[in-house]
Image (tube, rainbow, N blue to C red; front, top):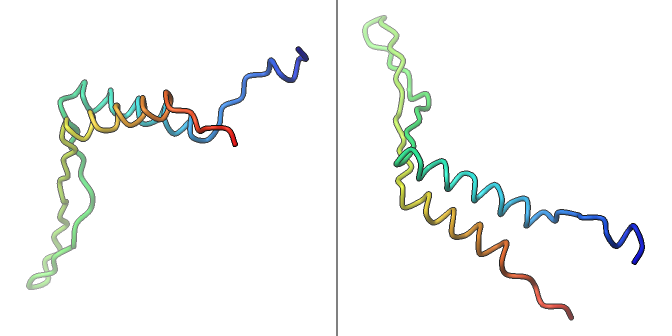
Length: 80
């Protein structure tokens, strides 16, 4: 075996799988994630009001991310 054959390389799918696994574990650890984004500003009678929209990522989505990441790591494409 040569040194180049021993070199460990990560493919884009492996990197994506690891990111999915990490995000899935974080969402499950916190029993879901809540985050806020800026909403539509309201101008009423010369008063400017800023709003925010709350978004929730449920634990089921975290479980789905975790399982998808594991499946991507375990399954290998068949060689032609």
